[in-house]
Amino acid sequence: MKSTGKKFITTDSDYQQICQEEQKIYHHFLELVLTESIDQIIDRFRILFIQCSPYQIPEISTALKKIIQLPESEAKFNYILNRCCYILINHQQLPQDKKNALKQLMNLFEQAIDKSESYYYGSGETKKMLELVNCFTHSQEYLSLKRMVEVINISSANNTNDPLNQPLKNLNSHYPYLYKYLLMSPNSSKEHQQAIRKMQVEKQQKYEIDLSHYVSHQARLQLSQVKKSTSAKNPTLLSNDELLLSIKQFVGKVEGNETYRDYAKRFLAYTTVPQSYHLFKDSFYEYLSTSFDVESHRIQVKFKNKLYNYLQNIMSDSDEQLLNESLMMKTCNQLLSFLILHSPKQPQHFFFINLIGNLGPVITTGLLLKILLVCQQVRPNLEKRFAFLFKHYEFSTQNKVQWLVKVLENMQIALSTNFGRIDLSFFLSR
Image 1 (cartoon, rainbow, N blue to C red):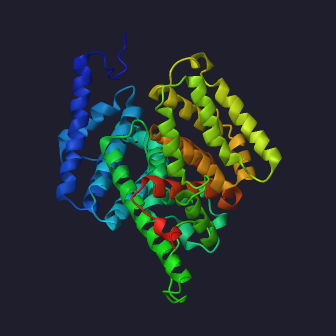
Image 2: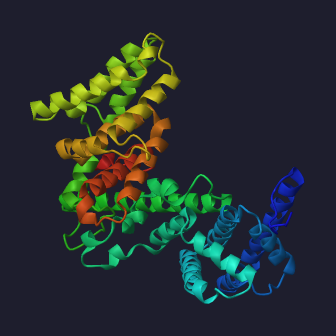
Image 3: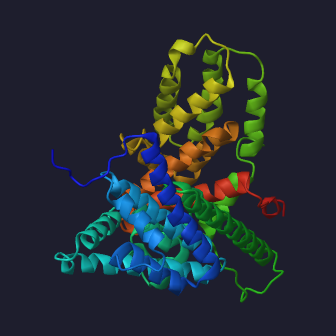
């Protein structure tokens, strides 16, 4: 029987050997980021991953060649190349260095795509490497890298006179709470995850500082304590009036004489009393349904009925059980699916659009905030669904998806004022 020349991982020892080769590559780049410049490391990327030229350290090129001979080489290569990219990015301390590293990496991959045809008659290893790099540029890992370019470089939307005609994807950098799901995948490497988390924390902190500064400036303006000629930049994409309305909604008293947070605390205190799951769903309906108390009686009845019927049908076989944390969490997760969208596999979100159209983005966001305030564990679920909607519309122009932009902006304010370190209560106590 003729050999195919491909190495299959058939035993534990084979698997361990491949893992060892993989670790050699990672350790090599971890050493490089401590000793060499970005330009030097990019040149090593070119030699090792694209040109297949003789590498300064033969042991590293041999390790890579062993890996690309595997039948599952595409998935393995994508993971290795992506992780090496993030080793380079994550170890740059200055924002400008991160930008420079990303820019050079993206240029390198674009050049590789251009070379793929000219190397058609090249050596087998060179063709194979370019083939794998070409596949990488069509992968989810590469798409995440491109999104990260938008986040780090601050999109071109900031440099255009007509941002509403720019694609939604240019707003990647505006929403740190979505970074985990826009810029990471379940298979993201440790370096990749660290880079995104660090960036998320930095962007969120800056957002909260800028928001506090802007609101403080607006408060002083209203009290005539500063000249109208002075200015502070609005860190959101909302108008000044929209922003102040949002803050009043998510920080001020909106549920009778209570803030959203106070109202949630009172509801949670009630749930500590032993009760059946069925009774809990009834009280949960009362807690949530006040969001539908709008002027239109028809809209009130329409949405209240839908919410009531949906809640009654959630895990109805557990109605006689005593309420517990698991039932609470499952209920809130299913509600988010009902209100926003079921799942990426079932991406219908007409009900969500209908909510925004009838209640407006502020009240709709408040309804979702109520759920988060009684069960913070479901926040990743909400963020995941928002990220999916963002990806679903990322190539649409912003003017066509203003309903989504308004909700994303309001949710950023709601999360920052209720779960962040920012305190804007001073604005409402004047």
